[in-house]
Each structure stands twice: as C-alpha cells, then as structure tokens.
Image (cartoon, rainbow, N blue to C red; front, top):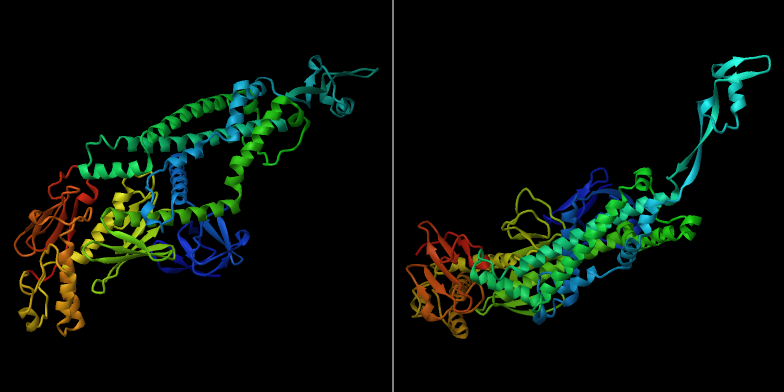
Length: 604
C-alpha cells in the first residue's frame, strides 16, 4: 500500500510505503485517517512517533524513525515545549493588544513544584528506609547440591545413596559390610539476595536515578536561560538598540525581581536534586543492587507479596514505585498519551510562530487587527497593507496592495529537518535547528534572539518587496502623464516624500486612462517613495531635516526614536538598501544591521 502525504518541510505531496521508514514529524495527512489505537485524526495531522516506533494508518503499519537526543538536548526540548504551553495559555492571538512575550514565562515555575514522588523520596532518604534495605535486605535460603569430600559434608542430599551406588569413582573402598565413601552428594545452603522484592528495589533505584538526572538537566537549562536574560543589560557585545529591545521583551515576561527569584529557586532545587542523586548513586554501589542482574526487569504492576505489603522498609519501596508509575511512567510509556502530547506540542509551536510573526510587525510599527480566528490585517503607517493568514498549519504573510504581489510562508516544525536546497520565501521554524540562515530560523522561548530573528526576516521581505521600485524610471509612461507629473517630484519617477496626501494622488492618477500595468508601476513607485521615509526598525517617520536625498536613487536617514540609520546607495553595478551603516560590525545588531540587495533595474 502507498499513501500520499504532505512533506511539512517542502510542502510537496509524496508517497510513502510501509517498507520504508519515515522520519517522525516530517509528514502530515492529506485527509482524515484512522490511526489505530489513536482513533480518527483530521487532515493536517503530523505523523509523530508515539514511543512504539510505528504508526497504523487505515490499518497499515508504517515504521517511524525518531531522532536520538542526549540528556541535555532532551531537557532543552522539554523546557521549550513546557514554556510554549504556558505562553499559549496566557493569551489568544486574537487579543492583539495583549500578545505575551515570546521568552520563557515565569509561569513555568509551577512545573517544578514539589511532586508527591519528590516529597516521599526526600522523606525516605532522610529517614534511611532505602539505606536500611541496602544494609540488611530480606533474603531467602537457596539449597544447591554439590559433590564434596566426606570431610566437608555437613548435610547430605536426599538422593546421596542412589548417587553413591551409581558412581564407583566416589568410593574410598568396598568392604564386606558395605561401601566406604570418598565423596558424597551434599546439600549446601546459601543466602539468596536476588528475590523479587530486592529486584523491585534495584529497578526503583534505576528509575529514580533517570528521573533525577532528567530533572537536573531541565533545571540547568532553565537556570542557563535565566542567567542569559539577567546578563543582557550589561552585555557589551550587542548593539545598544538591540540590547534595549531584548531587555524590553525580557521585561514584558518578568516583573522586577521575578527572574532573580525564579533563578534562586532553580539553584536551590539544583542543589537539592544533586544531593538526592548522590545518595541514589551511593545506594547503587551496595551488594544488594549488584546482586540483582541488570536485565532483571519488573513490570509496572507489582505483585502484592507479604514482604512488600508488611515490611515497613519495603512498603516504602512499594509506595515510591507506585508514585513513579503515576507521575513518570504513565506519561512516558503510554503511546496514546504520548501521541496526544506530541500533537499538542505541534499546535503550541504553530501558535508560537504566529505570535512571533504578529509581534514582529508590532515592533516595526505596524497596526494589527484580527479579521477572523485565522486572519489578521497588517497596516503600515506608510499605507502599505498586509495580511497574515493561518492555513493548514502554516502562516502566510501577504501584501494586500493590489500593485504589490508577494507571499512569505512560515513553516512551524516542532522537529528540525535539513533540506538539501532552501526554498525561496519559505521559512522553516524549529526549536532545535543547528544553524540559522535566511530560510531557517531557531524559534524557541529559551533563545533570547528568537523574536529579533523573525523581525529581521519580515523586515527583509517587506523591503525587498516594496523598495525595489524606489526611484526607478517608470517605463512606457504616456506623454500626457509626464506633462502633468507632480511638480515636487522628478519627471517620471517618485522619490522620498514627507507627508503626501494619498487622496490627491488617487484623484490625480484616476484622471488618466492608463493600462493596468502602467497604473500599477506608478502606484508601486509612489508606495516605495512613501515607505522609505519610515524607519525600518520601529516604523516612525523620519523628520524631513534628517532625511537626506542623494544623487539618483540614493538617500540617507536617521531615526530619533530607536537610533536607527538607513540608506540606499550604489555599489557601482547595483543598488543596496542598508540598515546600520554606522554600526560597529563586531557587535550583534539584529534588525539594526542589514544589507539587502535590491533587484537590478533601470538605472537613473
């Protein structure tokens, strides 16, 4: 059987077969399908591994390959998605006046509240229940039979006479009265530590060790992220405007002293869990643990043996085991629950990418208005209109001005995939990509530069779409239009304009009978001349005294609000739009430093 699905990364439709493993998270359904134990799921559902390494689609099993993550990578991913769930719960995207900060929120702190397992483990270690088992475990008596010299035999086996009669090599001598034995089949008793209850004890230590190591890794990831945020203000490696913007975004999430308080809490918990891990690892060095084979497994449901039910020490083991199953194993081993959790992670990440895109426009001075649950209008103060639409799990950014055609697609991918070739105007967003490029963004709440990366991408796309026509001669312009060209502008083109009246421009343009292509060219040139007078970083219009026209298409301008500087200049063969030409190249500047190649057009 072959199944047609959509490649999330490329957008292409591909055929998959049961005989070939597919990467978990790479493909999505094109229609509603039955996914075995998970029931029916709609089109757009991403095919993710539920822990079994396979998924049933309409009765056919397909093998899934999940990426291998080390402890630190897994912890980073878990913290990121815990933060995403908290961010999604803070506000809906339709509430554009209260879009939450995209960095780790303080609400994540409750994820590290003491669980019942932690409380009772702390008590067991403090009172020494587990240490007493390690020192004086319950044992059973094991009886083995062994052939021994007569002088060493303390207790004979039940069948020693039959064995002696059948083995003459064990005779010392034979007399008229009987046989004098040289060796006898003896019964030897030994203490047996490897009993069921001690096997439970040993496996519990393994489970607790993994649980604590994972918790420590998540706490270290959180602590490191908080440390980076707290160090922002004093960073010398950042452009002053970028540093201010990052601190502002950080401040939206954390109130005064809140980050320090959360960091102090994380450090306290780190010390607490470090101590618990040390004690658990010490217990694993004792003879009881070593007597139990590593491959001796214990099912999740324990047997109700007398020792586990009545011995106070082993009753604590049973209690800890039950809490571990309830709080850890039930969520990490149930395929139905794992599948739902990972689908929720996909939805949270899609929401997060939409949040970033909306906030990116707000930061650049655009006004955002929700039109429906999946569409938002974007209005730039220059008159450029855009639209952000959520469709089939992707975010589509479009220009609504009829004379400007373009689309930028943001593809949220909860898991990173490397493409051999990038796809223009298709941005892959992932929380764990190895490197960033113009078409791949690392978007994660623990990455302080996530919002700036999206802002820079959106900024670059709008500039390429609009500014390319700035200062260009409009071809095939009728002579009657040239004769009535606005006196404040060079003939046949528009250059930067301070505060023109759009209504007058429309009346002027409607006074001519022009072909659609010529009319669109005039509108694009006019729109570009308006757009370039606004700061590309914050959206504020430059004062006329700080906007300097140069020869041909060139200009230079400064922003009073965010200290941005931008210009168009010639390289001799082409024109470039440059932001931050006065910025130091050795400092990270985000949106305050870009060099954008404009398409080669007709030179003035």
